[in-house]
Image 1 (cartoon, helix red, strand yellow):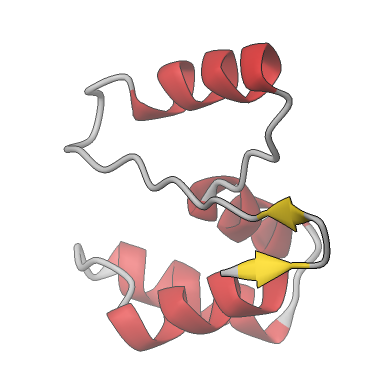
Image 2: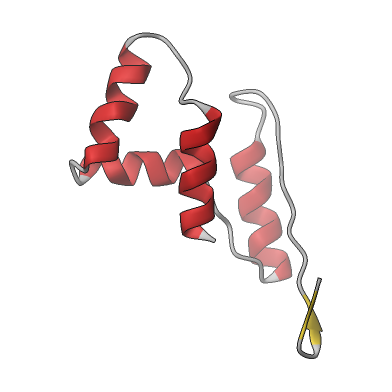
Length: 80
């Protein structure tokens, strides 16, 4: 997509838990002057700030489930 005089690139790093996604993303963000968005960090912020979303996240995790794609998508879209 073209915005003014500069190109906008988006990178997504995916992998299983503990595979080093966050570590690599932080290194790349620092080296390439990128913004690092981490859904887990956003969820932890909501939990520590006792938001309405936090209650749903905590309930889902307590049941041993993953947060649904719709919720993740909304969180990412809001952050972007």
